[in-house]
Image 1 (cartoon, protein in one colour):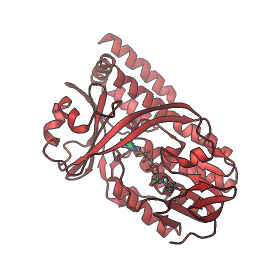
Image 2 (cartoon, protein in one colour):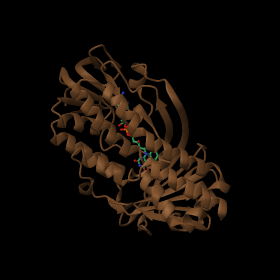
Image 3 (cartoon, helix red, strand yellow):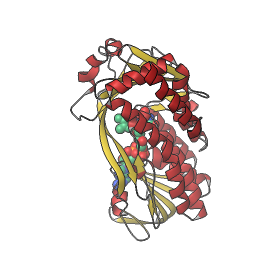
Length: 369
Ligand SMILES: Cc1cc2nc3c(=O)[nH]c(=O)nc-3n(C[C@H](O)[C@H](O)[C@H](O)COP(=O)(O)OP(=O)(O)OC[C@H]3O[C@@H](n4cnc5c(N)ncnc54)[C@H](O)[C@@H]3O)c2cc1C
């Protein structure tokens, strides 16, 4: 499609965040153009798990993810050595959904909504009143940078300053094996985690995540004998790597430019909250654009990020100390209610006050086992 000379909203990047922001703004009546330098459907290293709060956030954008062919999962299981603990989500289910299927689904919705999609089109610069695509210029009242963790829009708009910035490295591969449990599983190893998401009746997605860019999935598998024998012989895709960044920006907007999704900061991938965050951000961003006041988005963006950031901190703490992790998982295995409450907090169904009480109970349990 040829670029139109002007638009209300120009979205740079047509990944999940860009398409979600475009859909949310279109629902509020804005004329929207999205440009992405790749051709859809775009694949990416991702654990492909969407938590129930993410499923709900997608629904608030008119996206019924059930229709994209996901594999539901009932809750989360933690496993470390011989110990394991599991809990069901208080309400709803999570979805395992291949990244390419999610992208195709979002593209179809964007097309039906009348969003102008420029594929294979790179945005090369921001101007005062719009964006440059090589040698053509598109005027835009608003510009959203949804161009991922390495965002050029963030640089061009001088929004790089961050309060926190650290990285880990993820490697993803699919395996042709029927899911053996109704849970998304996190297996804790030595300085790394392997998480398993069921994505269909006959396939699972495995992601290894650690602080070492050289530690590949296949090399780490022997650390996880409980699952290694199921996976080793049955890979169905090639390994794909990605960087998981923990980044909190000082500001997510300037003038007519706002950032969304990974461009606007991110939590560690171990939380499985990246997609949920961007669906929620998209809804708030569209509301702020329609009101003509991006300060509303800044406040909402902070609020949306608080709980996942807290959970990421907690999980990274467990990851950093085998002793603490062993005690915590044993304590939660003895009192499964504690893990159920932690999971309820994770998916936004338990207040921080209740969680603090739970945290005290867990601390006591850890001291006494
Ligand atoms: C290893 C790993 C595992 C993860 N597991 C999960 C999980 O299980 N669940 C979950 O919810 N989240 C997970 N995440 C996080 C999730 O993948 C991200 O939050 C999500 O992909 C962010 O989407 P985005 O649209 O912001 O960015 P991206 O998906 O990176 O999309 C950015 C788009 O912008 C385009 N682009 C870039 N520059 C330009 C330009 N100049 N012009 C035009 N287009 C441009 C790119 O082509 C790309 O399509 C994981 C992340 C990692 C690294």
